[in-house]
Image 1 (cartoon, rainbow, N blue to C red):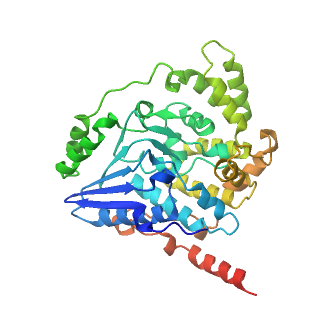
Image 2: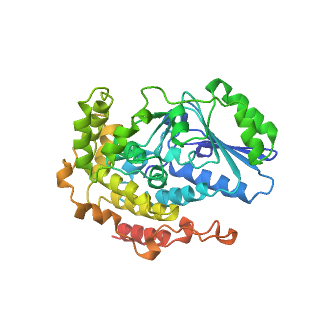
Image 3: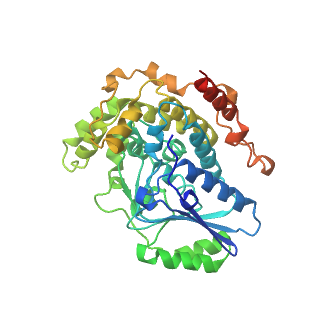
Amino acid sequence: MAPEAANQEEVVLAQEVSHVRVLTLNRPRQLNVISSRVVSLVAGFLEKWERDEDAKLVIIKGVGRAFSAGGDLKMFYEGRLDDSCLEVVYRMYWLCNHIHSYKKTQVSLVQGIVMGGGAAFTVPSKFSVVTEKTMFAVPEASIGFHTDCSFSYILSRLPGHLGEFLALTGARLSGNEMVSAGLATHFVPSEKLNELEEHLLNLNTGDEDKVRTTIEEFKVDVQPDEDSVLNKLSVINKCFAKETVEEIISSLEAEAGSEGNGWITPLLKGMKRSAPTGLKITLRSVREGRKQTLAECMKKEFRLTMNILRSVISGDVYEGIRALTIDKDNAPKWNPPTLEEVSSEKVDLVFLPFKDELELNIPAEGDAFRWTGKYEDSVYPELQSKRRQVEAAP
């Protein structure tokens, strides 16, 4: 995996102002995508501040036109032959689990694009503030990946079958739709966001009632636009309640011909262009998420990610990344190319549990165990070292 650019320390900025801590994602030219360095720095700052009695409130934001467009796809592509992304995957999923249960009051200020793993830094926050410039999506299935970073847990708890809809279509939600769907807590006009941040800094406390009152001084009550997909939930629930991806597509095709359902056509085209294997893995993962705890979802998603990156049943994720970000021809050649060729038996293979020592280590309950189970505490560093020694041997 290629090293990151110089000035690595600046990909994440940290500011400490009395009792407030501000974390800023600072890769604007790359839409603040999450690299190994970003994961390491974010995890380090969040742990430091949770342990710091003087830190009461944590604000997280991004520079530029994106909060974060998700994981660094080129990083994964460059590591496709040597398992070198295992460490960043482990660290990211371990971090996601901690963000859900973070002990200090969190406020995320979400301007612009927020996708995939980037949304994992915002949606679990106690307060997640969005604007009219916010755009959310989870498009991973379209490139042969799956809905990860705790989103099989998050999406499975949205109303009806909205979670399956978002995961399989990659449909975009605006800021007001995020609030209406329960993916954000407050809508604040973008021109007021800096002023809100200043008020939070001056508030200088993590008291949730006071933080909420401050945000509500700036918030605007919003409803989904008339043509929002959130006003199409009856059709979405009817179609995405079907058991298989094939049946979902057939149901959408039947509904698309009805008056007022023209919104289905572009989404249907997108699904048909998506990686068949990614769609089937994603549907099963979100469905399983309904019956799983957060810890169970995180362990499952870690297995799925590693098995997908290891091309256990398909190399589609690398073909998807190639077509989207490397060659940019937007003409992926999926293998297998059809849904019918992706059998349940094949999909089963990526869901199989790892040996206990190879699973993501979710810390036990209690402050004494809170920051245990890190990558360096796992068996993986030793395994990776042995692998490199074998590869280097004459």
